[in-house]
Length: 493
Image (cartoon, rainbow, N blue to C red; front, side):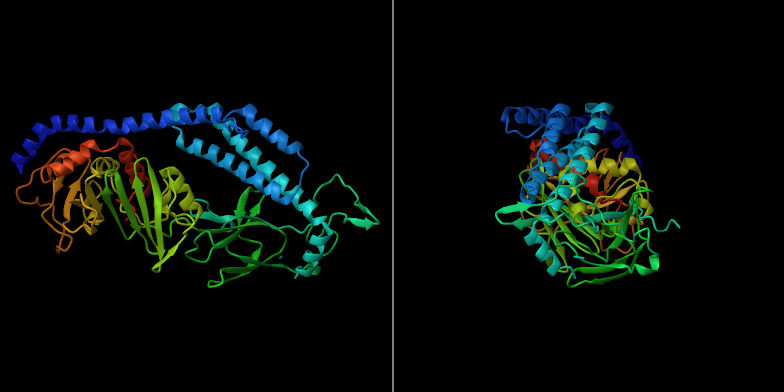
């Protein structure tokens, strides 16, 4: 062992230099993304399609002013314009998340955040105007009458523990605006400047006892997953927080996906579920499926999530719950890791821990040097090697990570797994297997220590595997690294 340690120390410098050369792929990926953002901005300028550049304050302000002055309140047109506004909001949100801190100033960050808020407020204002216009239509009023039968601080929703799933519902009682009267060939309506008016409930001039609670029957949306009964929260504008008090008699019909509850007043409400119910993961696997292609599978207590990786993009391949494919509207669409992360969280499938998640999940704590270093080096060799969960990772201690590895150059199932241990500075192949009776750090026979995982695997790899690693696209490697870092499979499994 002493001789092996000495040998490892002796060649450590040259191995780290070789690894550093391989890691230049990460810097190339960062430069490519910087250039791509600049190119996308230039492409938008050349298109001249009338849509504003949301990063240019003058353009976004002009766009909002023009729509604010537009008096057309047709519901269909407002909804179509609303889609454009939501797209602008998403672009700004993506820029705030994707742009490195050294490429965006504090002033730009504040500008983008303010633009997002203004766009959201304008959209809400336009929806209210379109609703008022709709309610003035006498035909719509007849339909509405037929359907009238629509409609301590433990109570604060912890937004670190819970995530909003399925959107926000604005529930109000509205004063009916003046209706259109048909007099001969004339259509007449009283015009009021106040816009859509909310009917207060309960009213201030009557005792509360005369106002029964409001029963709401809400159909849960099909485009999201609720793995357990959601928590219903109401928005408290005074405290600027979501609360659960004021909502009672909550019942769910799971098969019909219907929630019924009562409120003492009209509130803006949302449905929440635990942000960590899919953590810790039960298992995970990453395997190459072709040149610069791979598949990441994360198995949780509720679902199996498969993410396909190709070049500089990734795609939700499937979400399987109780042997049934769900969320088919999200699968098959190529996107960036950052976008995929946002889409999955929004759909209720969260496999992306935050910095505070360890407060709510029993984690397999690992030293940052071992965990982050492992993800980086796993990504570098992912073009030719498959990785998977090992039960011995729990036994290896905080300073080391253990995972299964297999050279994998053909598109079939992985069969010949070996166990490797890594602490960020030293890699070794273990003698034990996944079915051994106890954990042991004993080295595999005829194996040595190495400073990097790359050189450790190189001892047993074919020339074809090493050639594929060296020729791999830097964009593919960067996407694999982003997904490993986002899911943190070595800690949250």
